[in-house]
Image (cartoon, rainbow, N blue to C red; front, side, top):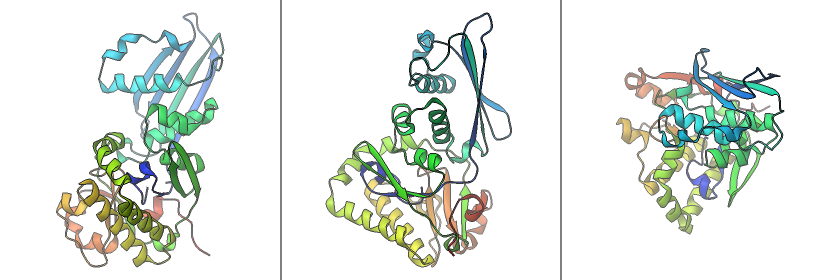
Length: 307
């Protein structure tokens, strides 16, 4: 999400773009062995290492209820899979058949590039489900990331109550040639981050002046056709939101010094995931940024070039 974070949950538009790396999902159906029908789910990292390997009996109701008392990462992941699988329509899994689902990421799981949203989009497509409904029942949040994963193109995303809406939007790669993404190696849980500011978001929703400000800034970013206008809008969005929600900007968290013509903005949940910077800022904070992994925006984000 380039612009619109947090406020997208209270009706403000968000601007989002897909990245090239994604997540694969392969499904195998086979005759069940003597032990009964089962579903095996294995999730693999970018390097092929398995980070999750779970097995469920079919029908799914046979899942042991003792898991509900556990709070380990593995048990939480198992509950997420169980909840998602429970949304599948009755009769989808064939009697006498077992299934193996294997997913593999094309990006590091710690990067914050969308391991959950791409999983939801893939599974919903396979199971014939509404991906937005799956997202809301399993993870919550706005659902913008699932919409991007489904569409594979840039979009404007907004919500009317619980209803998700989106329309086409593109950002010319000519405007982003100087941009870099800084991976901080510290994945944030965006749902926890959203929960932390929920009460302030509700207050913001009832502040007509503030909502108008945010909508105007997002509209300016959406329509920007020059680099200074685009980058000034992103900095303004971040400043207004940080002040309204009591969140630190990356300048405050990392003690960075603002520089004329520079850009430094959170991407993903604030306090982790990624930073968006331009070359002016990269040069000014070269020493501090050296310890992080950086890639060119245009090398990873699917923009649209103007003609």
